[in-house]
Length: 182
Image 1 (cartoon, rainbow, N blue to C red):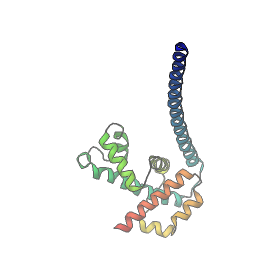
Image 2 (image 1 turned 60 degrees about the vertical axis):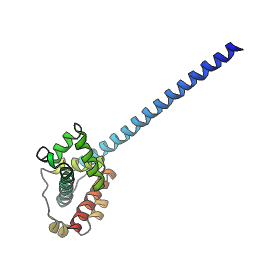
Image 3 (image 1 turned 90 degrees about the horizontal axis):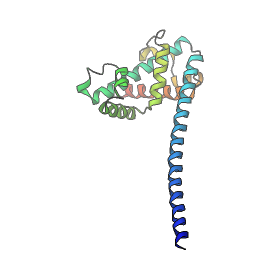
Image 4 (image 1 turned 90 degrees about the vertical axis):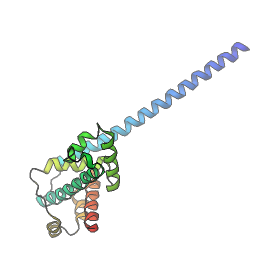
């Protein structure tokens, strides 16, 4: 009877270990699944940006909102780190340094939260900026109004990729809310 109890306890212990391993494996698989989904979204966004044909006016309008959003985001980070303002002259310098410095990473995350952006939004906006900055022109606010009275409807109509569409709408919201505060 004692041997039987010992064997049952050993089997229970093995099941506990197996349950623990299954839990860890499930967590790893869930993380990898989330990572793959995110990567797929980014790949689709890049493909969409490369394939979509925007008019020059649309490119200039989108580019203008993206430039201002990038500027606001950079300003938010630098505002939180005034002692590092010289070391962080551009958003790309912030992006490079945030992986190396916890202070910069915390300022970055805080700035994203304040502006209502996600990392994926910034990646999408930067992808558009990279692709079109060579041939785009910046339109100041008054000139943007001349070309489009309702930029959100234009974005919803011409931007096919959901991630980029969401990111661009966030940029418009940020710029418009900042302008209304002035």
